[in-house]
Length: 123
Ligand code: SF4
Image 1: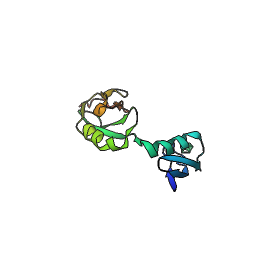
Image 2: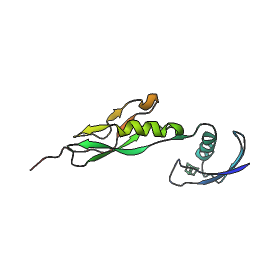
Image 3: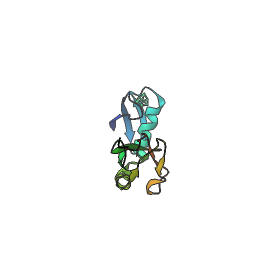
Image 4: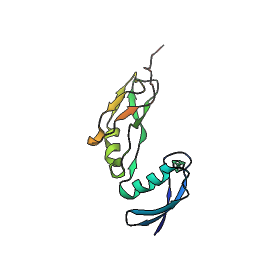
C-alpha cells in the first residue's frame, strides 16, 4: 500500500511516498535526506510530536512567556501534556532556559521557557 507523508523534521517539508505493508516500510522516495526515512518509520510505529506554546506570566512586561518541550513526546500524549502546561503560571522576571516542569506527565521531556520576560516596573 502506498502512503504519502509530509516530513516535519525540518522546514523543507519533503513529501515522502512510502510503500508499506503493515508496519514495514518497503521503500520510500521523495526524501532529501536519511532523516525522512527515519521519520516515516517512526510515524508507522510510534509517532512523536513536540509542543511550542506559551504560559501566563504575572507581573511581567508581557502577559505570556513562550515555552517548548525539550524532547518530543508520543503523539497520543499531546493533549495530556497540554493540560499540564495550561495549569502553569509564572511570576516575572522569567529567564529563558528555565525548566518550569520536569518530566511532564512522567515522560522524558521537560517544559522550558524560551523567552526572557522582565518584571513590569511602574515609572
Ligand atoms: S527528508 Fe530531510 S530535508 Fe526533507 S523535510 Fe525531512 S529532514 Fe528535512
